[in-house]
Length: 262
Image (cartoon, rainbow, N blue to C red; front, side, top):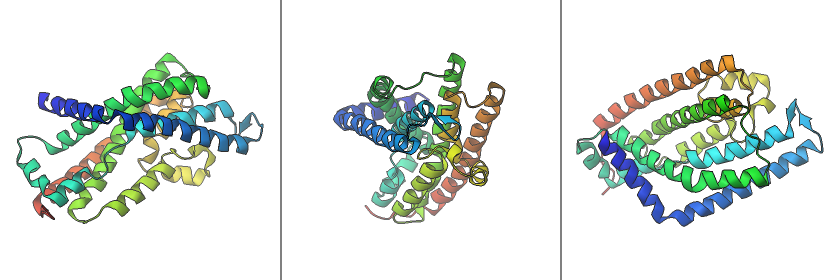
């Protein structure tokens, strides 16, 4: 396990070199939050609530959604670049678990984003956008746990798309489709409570709402405390399902390995 912590540490240190890029990312996130809040403010038209949702809660939802997107950002083409360059073959020969190596690499970057992007952006958001505090201390703890599970749901979903590079020379189209599906169906772009109930019921049959919608609803206290554990277990269920699918594809890809360059 120590070797994977070293991978995460190295990834963290590599990101320090480009810390100005992440500072720009903070500014970009704040600007995007401001733009989206302005759009929703025009939709509300001086109304205190819409569809039973107060504007203050919507603002907090938007802020959390964008900040989580910043933290959840991953290298979408890390496997594709290794496959096309031929470096994947040397990675598979190393005495390490490639999936754990990949997770460690992304966790190192995620920790850097938490410290260098999320914390400054939260401080700014509290004062600039009047971000609501957690519904309660225990709900905040549940939110952290749910957000972590949401990250793992997205990571395992991403891995399934990434490993497709063993069969597709370019994965740009697949990544774009996946990103669009995540943005729409996870509630990252529009809170799901504004969508028709039939669509919401369909989305709940997928892992998408476990990524953003569930953690943010926990933060806002919109999920009764007696139902939180079932929501967390549902997130864990999708992590297991997506992990198994990814593992099956990974084993098939390792057998099929064909170096496409390098």
